Amino acid sequence: MYVPEATSSISSATTAKSSNLASKDDFLKILMSQLKYQDPLEPMKPDQFLSQLSQLTQVEQLQNIAKSLEDLKAATEKADSSSGFRRSARR
Image 1 (cartoon, one colour):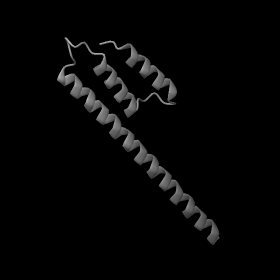
Image 2 (image 1 turned 45 degrees about the vertical axis):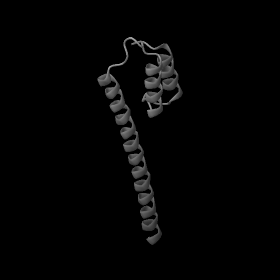
Image 3 (image 1 turned 30 degrees about the horizontal axis):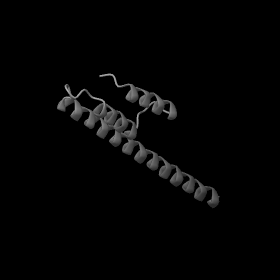
Image 4 (image 1 turned 45 degrees about the horizontal axis):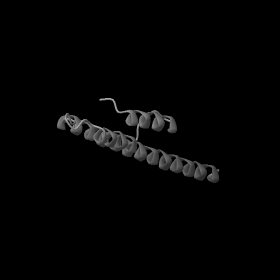
């Protein structure tokens, strides 16, 4: 199903971000556009809808994992820099 507004929403969201990854908000916009502009005589099949919702959940979980890894990296770098400071202060 081709949805013009959803397609333009995807391209504008992609160019606005520095990476090529779609965000949770991008997925929600696309899904809402599809639901809004679907053919009433041929609505989206339930399995397609559930598949898209599961993809949204996966994107959200991946974003949470990425944030956790960034936080862990920052904490590790902070710990490394403070332990390096202690070593140089002892000498």
